[in-house]
Structure formats: structure tokens, C-alpha cells
Image (cartoon, rainbow, N blue to C red; front, side):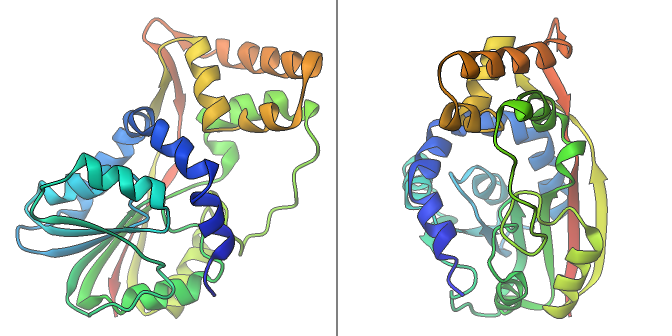
Length: 273
């Protein structure tokens, strides 16, 4: 199991797009990141691994608490951006590493991830390997999305354009997917099999600031979000109609402070058994 499909994806156009959208994504996800890092509460001198660290923002936040942080990811474009952004930070390092295959030493106190653990071909194998990096009683803290329908910041535009698109593939609960960990029983089973205990799920449902205005939201979601399929699959008048449908759906949520929509995520915590 080497997650080759995910490696190809995140080292191609997707990785470059996330680098280009890094500031927007960090601003969008900030309310969730802050809660998760506060819960993780890394202490000065602790050794921390940030799994799926992407462009490095959460790794840097953890390092500012005084911990020695190792950010790992499979995306070379995102890690190159992370290294450039945080060059010279003494207690922060980044490496290309596959969570399934990387050999760890059991001397880390915290394993953290912001939406980076839902994409494993074999999640049990991945979490078993990640468990080997933690000392006894080591702390696992990660964010994952609840059901797509509960995430208005994605589903409002997504539902509006669905009639114009080909039917989506049937969901595969065990396959890599942003919403693969929506089912708490499924995640509990994975973690139990992987050597974790005291598993807890806290529901986070903040309002996320999608954009300052309607056109900003459309531009953003055609880059990172449900409208990317519109640009990829549709052309001409049909494409224009789909985007107009998304504008109409999103316009209902526009406020004087911009476009704010509800998110729904699980904050998952567990202890190494």
C-alpha cells in the first residue's frame, strides 16, 4: 500500500493549486485550525508530527508553542512552499513521507493533522504505522470533515450545479475521500484496530468566511471546491448556466460582512494504547 494515486494527484495540478490558494485556505480554515491546536496543546520541548502538513501553516502554529515539529506530506509542491515560508525556524522541519511506509521512532508525544488523514488507501495500515511514532500514552489529534451535506460552504454551490454534471461515482466509505471519515463508528473501528484508545469526537460547526463577495466565492470554488468540476467538464452555455445557478444559490447567504457558510467537522482525539 503506497497511496500512489494520491501521490500522483497531490504532486500534479492539485498540489500547485493548493500552493496558489494557500492564503485563502488558511484564512478559511483558521477557525477550525485554532480550535484543534488549542486542544492538542503542545508543550515546549515536546516532539510533534504534523501529518499531511501541506503548506506548513499548522506545523508553524504548533512550533510557536515551543514544540519540535516535523511536518510530513506526499506533495512536493506544497512542501517546497512550506520550506520556503518557514526557512530558518529552528524547531520546525519538513519531509516528503508516506504515512504508510515511513519508518518512525517511538519518541513523539503528539500526532496532529488538519484534514490530512482521510486519503489513505488502507487507513488501518496507515494509522498502525503512525502509532509506531508515538510513545506510550502519546496523543493523537486530528480534524476530519463530517458529511458533505452538513458542510454548506461546499454543498450549497455543489447542489446547485449537480443537475448540469454527470452523476458522481458512488461513494466508497473505505476509499480515499475528503468525507471518508464522516462516520464516527468507521473511524472508531480504524483507530481501535490501529492501537488507539479513549477515542473522542467533538463536533465543530463554525461559520466559515468563504469570500468577501459573490464573485470572489465563485473564483475560489472553481479553484478549490465543487465548481472545479464545472470548469473541467462543461463548456459554453451549459457552463455559464451552471455557474449562474451557483451564484444564485450562494447569493442567498451573502451578508454585509461577506459570504459566510456553515462547516461541520469532527475533532478526533485518542491515546496510544
